[in-house]
Image (cartoon, rainbow, N blue to C red; front, side, top):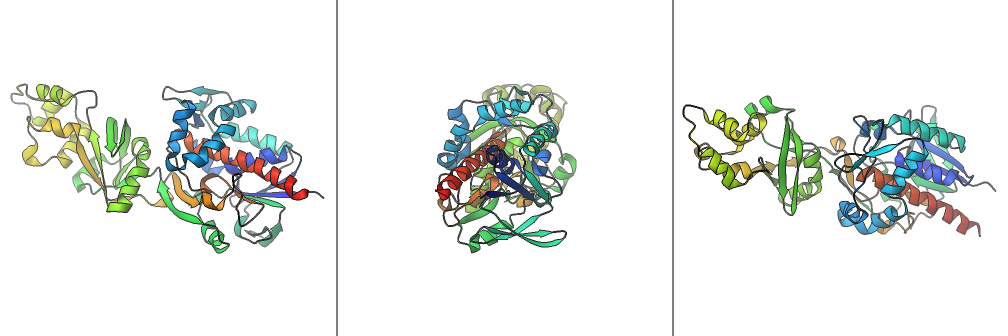
Length: 404
């Protein structure tokens, strides 16, 4: 008897599972709530598809924090090296940028997706769009809402690749949490990851610097210390450097009600060097002119000093200490829907080593549905691909075992 496999969600994790299973000649149906597949993937690659990262494996796996033990085995089977080779197998050449990030030579996400869809179509994968999953039963019966009304489908195996709870306009709305909990799956609450944060800026500061990048600074919080850049928004801060520290900052806000990030505005100079330059006579120059002339601090960096340094401390003898250590208080995380990715999700306690739900045999979960998080830089996509690969292999093995 021919087995049918239903994959719910047409992002990288779901499509990778579809490729692995269809390559063995099985019938695979991919269902997606949107009018086309890969929407979040395409949006993420709009300004340049950061496919993975070229750093050594031992460093790579540390990016998954407390979930390293669960993600590392997946990456050992299909990690950064295998992902780059897979892309090249689709005719998409990659290169390693100066930061170690791996990109397609064309930089765009769409050529890779087009080539991938051609491969999947050639393998017989069938796509059912505008099919929103609304529930799943113990017998792996799936309920969909479609433009033509409600549809029920039964599959011999199911892979859920429904995404997290961010960017709901692209299909990841977290609606699956409720009905998976109803069938006894342990779900850790969905929380924003790689997200921005709120800051109570003064009206003058946010009006003047909304949208301005803060470049070449060091952000410190707890044991985290990293150099990079971020962006001022009218509500607070966002951008790669903030995203890198987002898990620590979010957890601090959850525990204490706020978080404080320390900024070093002049990471290439010591406090003594700054003091020496600031102590030079400034004559009739204003303090703003003196900062720009002696230290090159102007624009948004000067604005941050004005925002956080008490007026009485804004002197040549005190400014160096603040330049090296400005405390910025973050009052809240940005909303989940505005986050790049999601923390929380299906607990690994509810899954076996092949990502199959223990209390729903034949149903697998992949991608951002799972309870893990990682910084941007290729780590998110790599783990999504990796989990799809693992679930595809696990599904095939389960089908063989149940046929005995």
